[in-house]
Image 1 (cartoon, rainbow, N blue to C red):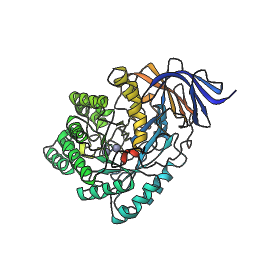
Image 2 (cartoon, protein in one colour; image 1 turned 60 degrees about the horizontal axis):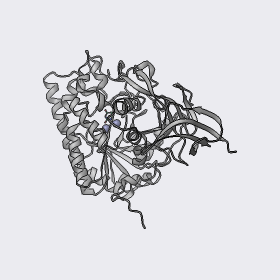
Image 3 (cartoon, rainbow, N blue to C red; image 1 turned 30 degrees about the vertical axis):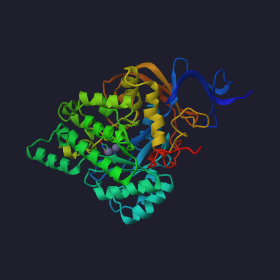
Image 4 (cartoon, rainbow, N blue to C red; image 1 turned 45 degrees about the vertical axis):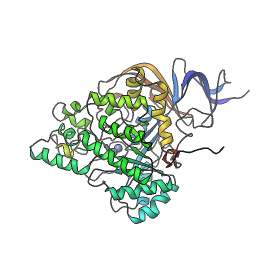
Length: 476
Ligand code: DUC
Ligand code: ZN
Ligand code: ZN
């Protein structure tokens, strides 16, 4: 008789393609059996009435990322990954961000030092390229891609990050040649700069004006330009944090032309609106992120795109700035002008519960699509599949036992990040991760965090198949 390290018994397994009743056997951190009436495990977990899904892969989050304005991210690689784990995410891909003048190798070394001994779940790094010198394009970036850093983000806005079109094209050429996934933040910097100055000159400084400084057309124009550059360079790209209809239309059009344009959205564009920026006093700053949340109609368009396949992944864009903190949203006091408020909201723990409740429970997306958007596709997008993102023999035993019926009203004290608020305070959801395993080790047990700092391993990513210029055709 074969004995497993762990057997998860009687659950309903859900993958990106199927939902079925089975037991799941784990040995040495890997899934080694899926079947009925499996032999005993040293550890037996009863999943009767529960869903068993692949651990979430959060393909876009920011942890302990230094900034240039004096703000400080509140989550390090321990608190951020603890929060991820408690929300059912077992792989995170934060960014290693280059500032102008920095060598990318030094940046990577710095982030590895920051992470050392802290992550409780496995992690990889995307690069952010803000200084595409000849040395970076010709030597450093190709070498880093070979070393397992196979995705990088390009900013079209933010003064200290933005690249011009020529620089973006140079980077896309590297992505094409060396097989990396280019992620693009698509907002027009000059439009934003002009609108911001106009608003400030009229004395409009409150958080709600953040949304007026970045209307949809700012995103639409940049999305179209990013698509055009990808077409010119003949390379797939991912448009990140898509917020509404006008950007979705551009992406849908491009996909219809046969261009390999992938799209990401985030929970904030599904449940928040620009009205949340107009909260009491300065409270709206809690929801300042870029692009900003839009309105109900735009939310509906994003939901349609999730259901129809226009979108490929749902990420958190967790950017953890505290609210009542001079290193956070109140960097210039309790009336910080909107253009100084650090951009970003926390959401690494609430990503799965919000998408499950608003999406699956409300009938907007299937359970399989939920798994695909939150785990399978992000693993494919970044060269981690099939080690991550699936329930299959040989995959890492990163597994969430999900209680589909538990009702939770989200409140900050429930969460495990180091931020002093959640933008989802008071949101009632159905379904919550109950028990979470990372490589076979229980790290969340019936809602209690039991993981350890340093358990998380650094992952080198393969060149993602999705980043190939032409679809892969198997030879006969
Ligand atoms: N927008 C970004 O581009 N990054 C971090 C957070 C945000 O709102
Ligand atoms: Zn961005
Ligand atoms: Zn981001």
